[in-house]
Picture 1 (tube, helix red, strand yellow):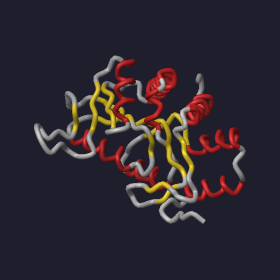
Picture 2 (picture 1 turned 45 degrees about the vertical axis):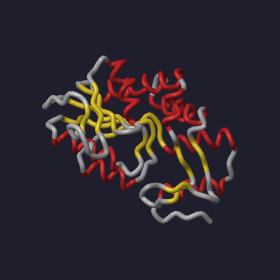
Picture 3 (picture 1 turned 60 degrees about the vertical axis):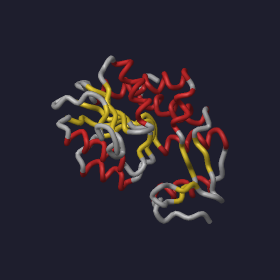
Length: 214
């Protein structure tokens, strides 16, 4: 895991090693947005494997030191980004925050948990970029609280063009350890899936809103 190509391949294989990636074409997975998907990646499984979670944390460290060397606080996007942020903040000896999807309905009704210091430079930690909505909402919450958001990092991106556009329109830099294309390359190496299946997976990525099982 010494360069971006090796890192991307290694992380894709880690996800496959822990069976975080599942396929279902006849009965697709249903997203909260209503989309149907032939693939589901549960990156949360990686936190149960000490060796793998350590390597992912080291990958994040490499990425952040290269892209955001001025970071002063690590901010996790709830919920899946929180354990990744905690592991990373501990390794970097930096303070940590996390951002809820919505404010608590009791107590102090916090949207951001942790000690908020205006002017601090934060990097947002996600598990996976899909639509980008949760990451952008978290960035907006931090900015409204007076925190400078340098950018965001995640384990994987599905690579949707509209998500990329949303990040750009919200002036949010984003980087990942691996991506959907690399993941499919490693799947093909392991399982030798048919060209028809690969075509369907690529078609879903191009137009997830309208994709339907054949």
